[in-house]
Amino acid sequence: MISRSLARAFLASVALAASLVLAGCDTDQVSLATNAKANQPVPPKLLAAMVEKDMDLQSPILVRLFKQEAELEVWKQTRNGQFALLKTYPICRWSGDLGPKVREGDRQAPEGFYSINPGQMNPQSAYYLSFNTGYPNAFDKALGRTGSQLMVHGDCSSRGCYAMTDEQIAEIYSLGRESFFGGQKAFQLQAYPFKMTPVNMAKHRNNPNMAFWKMIKEGYDHFEVTRQEPKVDFCEKKYVFDAAKPADAKRDPVFDASAKCPAYVIPEDIASAVREKQAKDETEYAKLVAKGTPVARMNTGIDGGMNKVFAAKIPEGSTGLSEGAEGTTLQMLAMAKAPGTIPGHVNPPKPNLDAAATAPREEPVTAVSAPATSTRVAAAAPAEKSQEKSQDKSQGGGFFSNLGRKMGFGTADTTATTPPPQATASAAPAQTSTTPPTAASRLKAAVTRFVPGHDKPKDTVKDAAKDAPKPAAVAAKPAEPAKPAETKVAATRPALKPSGSDGAGDSGQMAGAAPVVSSNSFDSRFGAVK
Image 1 (cartoon, helix red, strand yellow):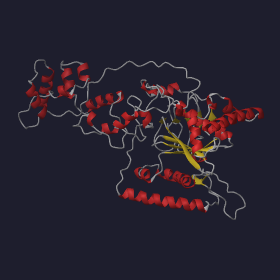
Image 2 (spheres, one colour):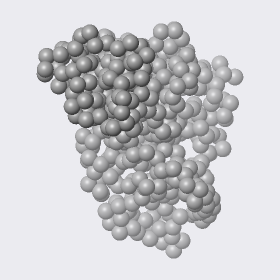
Image 3 (tube, one colour):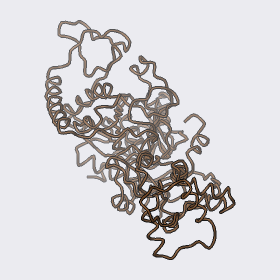
Image 4 (cartoon, helix red, strand yellow):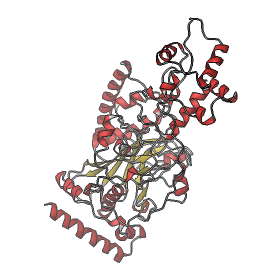
């Protein structure tokens, strides 16, 4: 049965491609049919899943994106007319913060409802393949929001987009192409900060974007209860879902995003089902808030997120603002196969440094554990080490060391490198009195530390460590010497890549093992229009 479906799919694609060319239809559809990368067949595993779920190859699709979960879902219409989930793809990289895009250059990936037609599919993309999200839509424009060229594309690099691996975007692109060949004029893209569950709404209840999120949750709920693509309109600078003309109206309502809403109704079967769902959600939400569900941390300074499947395979990788797992879980994921090739230039999100910055002074920086919702990894990146050094100096731990250096004791290399814990323990002589040490005694201790021949016996050093003032922070190990900047060599991308569901990346060595380049390399590399 699967082989027959494959044969039908191949013949249908060839016939449609030929008919489009002969008919002289628009160039967008011709490019969909004739470009080699954009015309890769739907993988056999997906065809088998379609057969199992009673879907046709060319039936309509719908796409949902979730930043916090770092997932892209492709839904497909079954023969009974409802949409069912076909496949979930982990997102390799998205940029910005949770919340909608507001202006050009803010690096935000958009949130909301968008429509993708054949003209938005780009088979000649610099990011292997891509499709334009359609941002800004009428709602965004009514609010004066700006931005352009916001894509879903390959290459696992983002500055306001949703980036997949090349293998993933080839597969997603093929599903969109087939739906257009089947007659779908445009497929809907729904982009959310997270899955709109009572738990997530409770965690983010203090977020300034909550009013917007509640508005787009209305459309989320419409799809959840109907499993149909919700009809989207805009008026009075807000979204309206599944609007229909009143019974006594002679024509359909006309909507304008900036104007007053026309008279409209929502079909009662949809409205009642949505009300029932929302009542259950609000009851659960109230229970969670009353129970004291913690509010999500505001992770300032972190640019976007990455699915943990990819973060586990990148040296010093982090999930950023996406939900992740640390320690053993990431280590276990590192052994699994990645859904596509991770390019060597991938720029993972920065780990959360807020926890380290606010750590108690008496604790070593490396001993501070992040909260459960944090996505900081155990290994510190080079940038973190530099920050830890500057924190050590600003907190006073290096005052007497600097004084000693000015007096001629020690060298710049010695004082610039944080000593190991064993050396730190001998920073001051043993105190014989409970009286707090004076400035003079501290100066004497600093001088003693740097004058040769003043080493104490081992037991005396231990006693001294008990009474000596504790340093503000102690690094886990001496700072490593700076490494010379690596020179990036451009490599020619193969014309085609196998689909992620056909066993791409079976080899043990992952492309993600390549060194991570600095964040400023992305803008210099992709300065041109996508």
